[in-house]
Length: 352
Image (cartoon, rainbow, N blue to C red; front, side, top):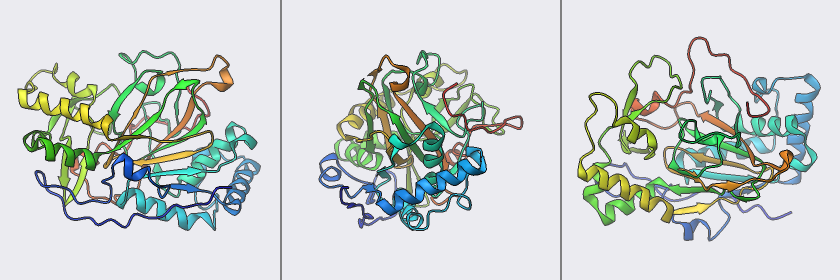
């Protein structure tokens, strides 16, 4: 078993302000973060045994995955380390990879219970769609990316962030070819834009109109929301992705057209993000966590295995950490899950 070299970041943070360089522990360049494994946590034999015992208890009690909590999924040795990982996600690098869950000894229910049970120590699961899915599935079900959300397809997905504090991915199986999980530091991206073109970095502080999909958010009536790409609130930085929702927002009545400077700034964002990204070495059984306010993630397109049981499949969680980090109101509102008064929350064990 490989040595666990994970440790908290010791880099400083200073209050941030649009137009000034960010000093933040979530600033990292690929060559630096890949120079060591400090951001990768390798489970010990004792910690693995704790997870397996907790999973066995979930099975013996016949618990639904959504009813698994810290109280009925005890991890006495691992829990304090998971608290450190949540701290690192919210106040440090913004990325953690956990290796060592023995998925080869687990069926689907057991691995889902392990993924969920470990993750309840990181945050509270949110509904990811209007079907009330607390446990999501990143799996190609023949979707057309022009008509549906990207996680249902095999298409390339541009750098973006999800509507939650933390994104969790649990790898059941990788693709035959492609499907790499890419992550870049949005703090580094902001600082790079500021260094190269400070005028364009400032352009992305404007609150852009972003078209909402048909997914429902509590109390939302407008077909759009307004959010900056680079946001600052109480000295904390928060990024939003440059996604197709911005382009779709341009077609809505009353929405002003992008200026030439905004177009150039958005394109620069798209161009620089891949330069700064790392490929996260997520393998079968691994769990990846990224903090959406300081990182962006992407996926390359992929070719799948012909056998159904070998198809690329990742479990997904959107998690809230209890307002641990100050957020602008227009971002906070849209990091609380997708639901309305009729939503029934569920944890399906496969894509629907």
